[in-house]
Length: 461
Ligand code: NAP
Image 1 (tube, helix red, strand yellow):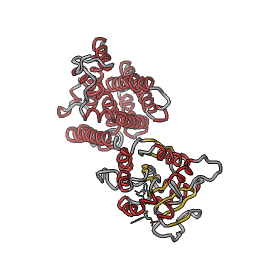
Image 2: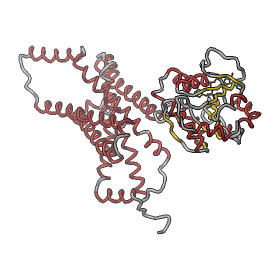
Image 3: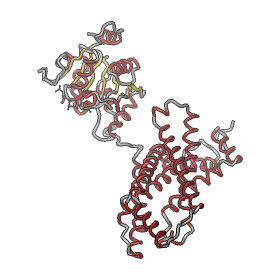
Image 4: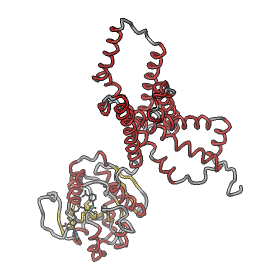
C-alpha cells in the first residue's frame, strides 16, 4: 500500500460505524490498554509485535502480525515501545515512509536525554510524520475508564495534517486533545508525567516551615513558660488550643503573602520607570504560585473555623466557665456585663465570619470551572478587590481579638511578642504600602507604566 492511499483512507469521511485501521507496535501494558479502548471506539486494531502468538491479554478483535506486515495495514502507527528499543525501527524505514508515527513514550527522569523521544524518533525515521501524544494518559486509566483527572491529551508535531489525524483519534476515544504546537514542545510534554505538583512545592514547604516555627513558639510560651513559672501543666493545649492559634496566624500570613509579590512588582516598576524589564526570578516564581498560597491559606482558615466551633465542647472550657460561676456564687456577687468586652467579642466574631466568607469566595473563583466562566476583568475584581477586602477583614479580626494584649506586659513572656503580634507584621505592611500605592499621584504613574509609558525609553519614537 502506498503512503498516499493509506493517508487518504485515514482522512476519508466516516460513513459506517467502523473507523479506520490503526496499527500499534508493542503488545505491552499500554499497547493492550489503548487497543481495547480503540476497538471499543470502533477502530480496527492491528498489532505489530516480535511474536505473532496471540495471548489472552490482547483484545480478541485485534490482529497480531510482524512489524512490517502490520505497518502496511494502517496510515497511523502508535509506537507503544520504550525509547531504548527504537533502533529496531530503522530497518523498517521503507515500510514506514510517509506514515504517521505516534510517539507515546515517557522517560524515567526529567530531561533524561538531550532531545525528546519524539525528536529522536523523527531523526531515526526522517521519512515519517512524527506526532507526540497520549503519554500523559496511563494504561491503567485507559483500561479502568477512570480518566476524569487526565482527560486532556497533549499533542504536538510538525505536520499539521498528521497532528489532526491523531487529534481525531483522541476525540473518538472520548478524550480532549490539546494542541501544543510543533515537535519542539515534545520535551515539555514528556516532562509533564514526571512533575510532582511543581507549583505547590514552594507554598507547601513554606507553610510547613512556618507552621513548625509557630507551633514550637506557642509550645514554648504557652506550655513550657507556664510550667516553669506557674508550675501548671497545660500540655493538653497541644491538641486544640495551639493548633487554633497557629491556623489563623498561618491563614493571615499566607493570605498577605498572596498580595505581597504584587506590591513588590509595583515598587520595582515605579523605581525602574518601565514595565519592559524582567522581574527577578524569585518574584516571577512567587507570582506564579499565588493561587496555591491562597488555597493553603483557605485550608488553614477552614481549620480555624472548625477548631473554634468545637471550643465550647472542651473540658477546659466548661471547667473555666464553671470556675467563674462558682467564684461569683462564693463571693455572692454577680459580675455586671462588660459592654466593652461584649462589643469587642461580637465585633471580632463578625469580622472573622465576613473575612472567612470572602476567603471562601476567593477560593471558589480560583476553581478552573468557575474562573473559565468569568472574564478577565471580573476575575481580577474578585481576586484583587475582594481579596484585599478579605485581607482587611481578617487583619481587623486579629487586631480586635489580640489588640488588648499588645500593650500588656504579660504578652511578652521571655521578652518574646505574642504570636498574634507576629502574625500582623506582614498583613499590616502589605495594607499600608497598598494604601500608599493607591494615592492618586502614585496610582496614576503606575497605571501609565502598565500602559507602556517609560521614564527613560530605550528606543526613541
Ligand atoms: P511494556 O509493558 O514494557 O511494553 C513494551 C512493549 O515493547 C513490549 O510488550 C514489547 O512488545 C515491545 N518491546 C520490548 N522490547 C522490545 C525490543 N527490543 N524491540 C522491539 N519491541 C520491543 O511497556 P508499556 O508500559 O506498554 O509502555 C510502552 C510505552 O508507552 C513506553 O514508552 C512508555 O513510556 C509509554 N507509556 C506507558 C504508560 C503506561 O501506563 N504503561 C503510560 C504512558 C506512556 P512485543 O512483545 O509485542 O514486541
